[in-house]
Length: 244
Image (cartoon, rainbow, N blue to C red; front, side, top):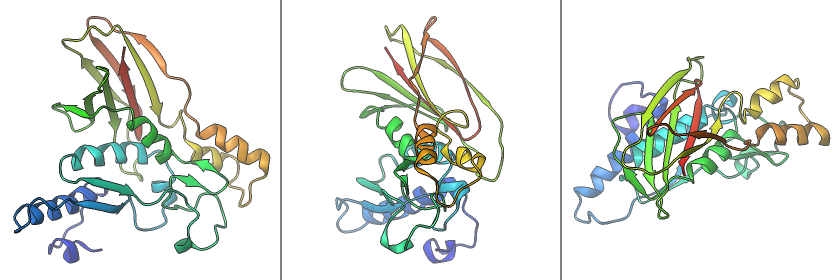
């Protein structure tokens, strides 16, 4: 939909703001209505309404999802990503594994970066700790574990550059940081597919290679020194940190 249709304005809304801008509009409408306690359930959302492999098949989805969660937190009761699989009736018969589908899993049972982004972000706790950052979420789990997500957002058509994060944790006895990553060197299955030559119908061996390329590797473990941690995150990268 155009901004004129949704907001009554003539503007180009950045991709990273479009979902939560719409969510906030409905949230405010409910709040000022005669029934302000009606739950808001957002049953479909994604980073694109078109088939754009550079968006929904790519590592871009890691930062996009993390930032969408950050922006929409507190405005909605339930949000449902559209959709679980790239194979569904609206798209017809899938003719290639990566066509910019809306799912978390591509044809051939290949988990996409969006799938692993959700897997990482699911490690976040239920309690959000305030941060002065537009590229991080700090949470506390019920077991007392501090969990931090940081990301380096850049538009999908821009290469961006690596960003350094310097984090100082206070009032924690944690000694180690366990770090998972999703970026150009970790889980970038779409690039692996392109390097393979983009086969329209991958062989079983190629499918297995793609599944392996998509998988997240074991977390890196670092010792915390005076509660300080430095992370370099590539453009379009997401990092999840658990303190132990």
